[in-house]
Length: 273
Length: 284
Image (cartoon, each protein chain N blue to C red):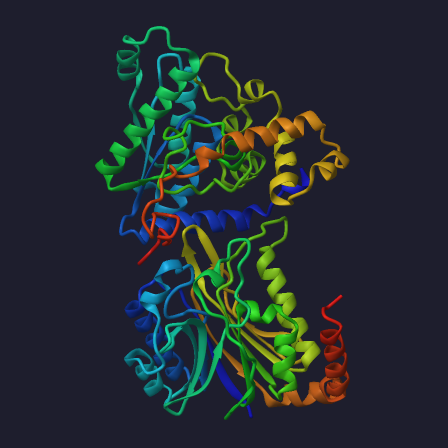
């Protein structure tokens, strides 16, 4: 844990300032986020409330009929604890209407559809409230590709995308995220009984330690083995990072002109701000 | 001589010359009001940092009306400020000018353009080719821009050229969070400014910016470091600030007597060894 442990007061300051400054400089003052009842979105809710004032933060809880009822209850507790606006928009009617045409769809297709359904609702609420969509993906799941492209990975800005799950836990303690949310097992809640760690086949603490050494410290495979990581675990995680890289990039463009977007047409997004 | 230096820890807007010029002019007015003799701004104060393809669009020639306005203000206070300089042969430099008495007294073009990690300066900018100290009414000075300061030879050359005050204009991104109270980048910088001041018996005056560009924060923490390596004034971390530091001639005098490292430097020896290394074809 020690290598991943951070000064949470300083971290809090930076991510809160980030949300405030990056939103205010666009001329807006509000944020919207999906609140699942899990720790990542709870933490972003607390960060946004502190950055923008709770009255300027809109949380939307978007359960499906198979979602654990505890998730919505936890989302509500989080919204109350940080004083932000809270709406529930169930996604069962639209998701079920779609799968009536594809009754044989497997869990992955259904899960992805639900994540993208939620994305469209958040971006609609972005227009409704004049608010930017806040991302809630952490560094662990972004690196592993454990998220749905254009679904839960979609946002305008993400305050926790450089924090490993272990650091999300630390910062959540610092910011006062309700205990029951910090302590429950992480789950994408796409089907009953699902947990992230069961599905991934390793714990977040294990993989965070490994990825910190691999990605942040750039240790070689030999060095990682010396650190005590199993070689099949290393290979598994390296494979996940590589195979999910497309999810972390914009679509590639066939180059034909002298100035192609993002290749030789390069500007910061904060251009003019 | 004793003098007051203002550290203008501002938050420039990316690619907005007009807004940034207004910001700089307001800070200059404040410096004049607060009886500063000299005001120091961050690197690229007039433009913002992650400019990329904006570089040619926001570059200023030394004879531009914007620089003329600052020259005029410098009849009331000396000014050191960073911007993108355009030359008549269309090269673009990450430059700093020292203005005083209505004139440009010195120009420094950043020599070491970081192009690694999150930096990409060499892609967009031309490289400066010299380190020169210059005389000012505050004594002999040298200017360095951010990464320049990390190359031991740069402050060394300026000190050997007689500079007793080193001005460092910076846009340092905050990164490297650990259990410490400070970011890795601020710890490293504070160690560097203190060590450089101590080694060279020179004052180091460091001005860094604040604000965010595409999620990257600039950590501030501008400071005045005495020739003994002690920070005598320091601006806030991570937020705009304006600090006027009193620089005392006595500190320089006493340190140079107490620890005459610069007096004892052996320039011919250093040159001989460097020439030998060069002749042998590398740094091995």
